[in-house]
Length: 308
Image (tube, rainbow, N blue to C red; front, top):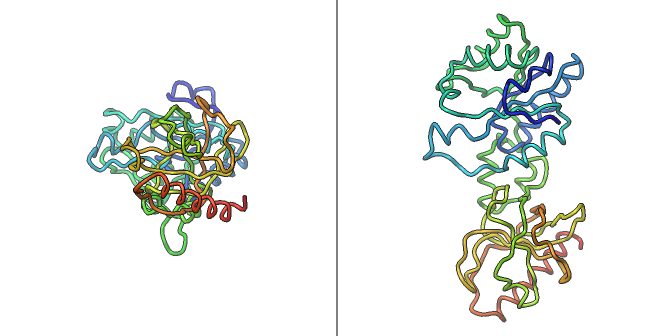
């Protein structure tokens, strides 16, 4: 997949099929758009282009309402590439873009910039200055400017609309298993393993401490059953999210213990942590003995969940 960040880099693409959005979770709703895009591009012999932004519009327009993203830019690019699209164009969401009219956005970005022949959006799609553009206007512009518009209905699961905010709420409650249903995949955190306090090693449970610059929303503080993936190898693991108050308060992070292994060294490697199921909320223990006893109970539950 070609990753570009300007329309100038798109000149060589030729005619395209395009979808546009924040794509801040790549959940089931987003996947429906992506699948339709790939299909339209194949049928009409077009280049498939996903247009997104380098930041959430709220970071500029409504900072007080800004939430942490479910995925980072690297994760987004990987997921889009895995879906088989040809190009991901990441536009800089700056003051100029935020103030561009809906009509000018379509003319400049979609028609002149990308040569769009098919444009695929969700039913709630808004665009242009103050969100003035909607799917009705997009249809009108398509007729005027020579591109087809396809509107994909919102995805729903168990009567609940699939959305980034709904998935964030699930993760905030520790419901990673349910979040995976809304995402269409297990939720992950990806980042570099760094040196920590090495407390786990001293009590017989060495952990891989993920950098705080990692990508992927951290769920509710607690212990999770999951997998640690490094160099293509999947290890059954216990993930602990939060601060270690038994020993000392540290900034919120995730650390992972590979079951029944003390010989692994992941320092400075990029690893992926998959969250399979919630085990228990975080707790403060009155000493090392009670902590170790609880860890043994956690690991027994995790072995059962993972079948490891």
